[in-house]
Image (tube, rainbow, N blue to C red; front, side, top):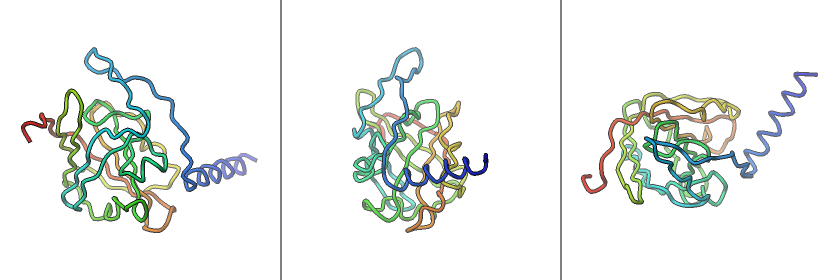
Length: 181
C-alpha cells in the first residue's frame, strides 16, 4: 500500500512538472543584515544571468511558470535572491522557450556564472561552479536553503526528455557594484 501511494505521488508530481503548471511555494520577505528585502512580484525580471563559457546572457525572471521561462531563466519562488545568504534556485529550458540552457551539460567545475542585479543596489555577482550532478525530477533537496550565498541551476536532461535534471551548484565568490564591472 505504501509503495503504491509513493508511486502515485511521484506520478502526480511528474505530470504537474511536465505540464508547465506552476504550483507556488509560499514566500515571505527575506531578512538580511537587519533589513527586510521585499519579495519580487511573479513574472518580474530581477537580473541578467551571463554564462560566458556557454555563450548565454538572459533575463532572470521571478517564478518558474511557463510565462516566466518563456522570457529567460526562472528564479524559484521561496528561494534566496541572488547575492543573499541562502540558495538561489534557477530553472531553465534546454529545448524550448529559446533553449537558454541547451548547453548546460558543457559547463565544468570552475566555470563562472555572473548575475547582474538591478534596482537601488545594483551589483554584479560572480559565482564559481563547484559541482555538477544528474538527479531524478523528484530530487527536491536541490531547493533546500543554504547558509552561504549559493546558486543552483537546473534543466531537464537529456535534451528532449524529462527523465532527469542536470544540476549545477555554484558558490558566490565576489560581489561588486555594477558601476565597477
